[in-house]
Length: 167
Length: 215
Image (cartoon, rainbow over all chains, first blue to last red; front, side, top):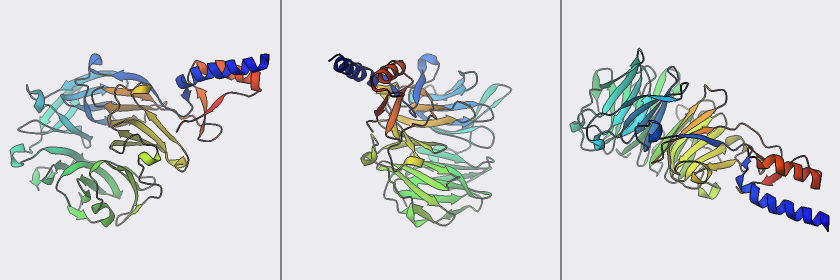
């Protein structure tokens, strides 16, 4: 009888504790980085690593945040317009020197970001939006950075080779 | 092929050739940046799905394709693609959602960002269970995961999951392997483990306490 009681006790305690346990092989959430920690916006569209710089680039609905993996802190924040609607970073990729972004900025939606001497720099890539009736959605860059491929919703792709733009 | 471009992936399939995989509303086009030509692979071009995410595994020479109807996988050469057995992965295989928003790979562990959580799928045990989900009930700030980045330089393995509305979840990757096969998992990582292990040892003479996974 006493043994039966212990077994029942174990089952009851187990039923309470098991849902709180973490299985071997399962990952666990260690931390959350959001706007309270300095993230420029909590709606994250895309991310990319820069292995050399040990930076994580976060494209959000209101600009780009740069997170230093080693220091575990945000080291840069960038947006492009006073209108939040024009600050959406839709896609991020690394290649060549720095990071390329497709954004909702009106005039020059494709941007190049790089760091030099610890300072972040943002420049426009000369792909001019009014040429295309609908939005840019995505971007890829060759390993050496010489070829950009930009996806346009409804218009196919733009291939940008050095300074020559073809469609 | 549709002009509605949704996603782009760069990968080096042939030495010296950067290929851009152009994910559209109905299939994938491939552009060879070196030759400035399109490469035609019928199986990919005729996929009847909107392509939301892609990833190329150079070790297995395999292309993973995320769509709104699940995850597809193809063994890829420079001239052909063959569907991999066991795919597509869908809700029938345990996914919480067929809407694949992001894909990342860490060794044999495939991570899928979906509208309903971050899924971890063990490719070496794909015929067994090997599927885990992190969502808002397990500490994620939001269920919808739109982007994944894995810090492989770190010795302990850290994954960053970008969510829609909740910022970024920093996730510790577990490399532990269950002792009794994939369906049985030791209670671990919780204060409950030593308590239950001692009770089980006293009552049943067992070494530890194991429970069967729900998945």
